[in-house]
Image (cartoon, rainbow, N blue to C red; front, side):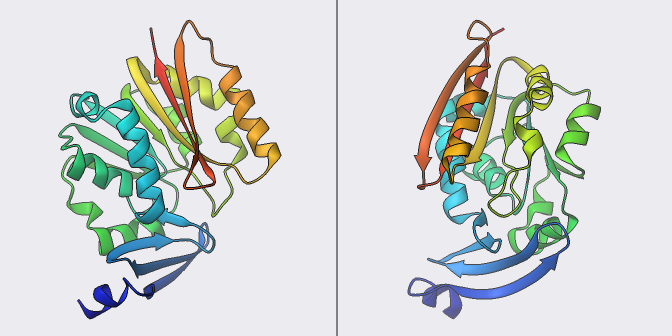
Length: 221
């Protein structure tokens, strides 16, 4: 309790872990909340939770609450999952895909992710998972980072086409991206421009927490 109170004045690191995939991971008390950080950015809770919550609000909490199955690609500490459960009261099925088993161990230890009954965690590469799954989803959250970098496959047409195929009619993709330079701005612009307007409604929410851009994609057919 003392560390939590002191964290309103300065961050207090309580745990650190080295991961072969994610490098340095830390659990810190900050402003009265536990957060998970990588070396250079927030991985879960903190600013990331605010970013993804804004995206979910844009889709509509009432609409999400009625959904049946949500896929989260890139779980980390599970902040978007906690938002779905705690703020939206989502009761449907959730599948979380995370490549780094060390992150999930930390998420279970510090954020009780393993106590959410409707959540299934799968340790797998997101690209491999979307090739194999036969499920259809009402909402797909894409939140995949390696520190501040995003893997190139996320912006390749094959991956985008595949996750769009996995959406149910009237389903949504919430894609969290980071923009640190002009090349990444152009990358996002190209991605958005390639969607067929008769099949998808696209909305971008730029400069969330300074460097993030949310892309909300609704499947119309």
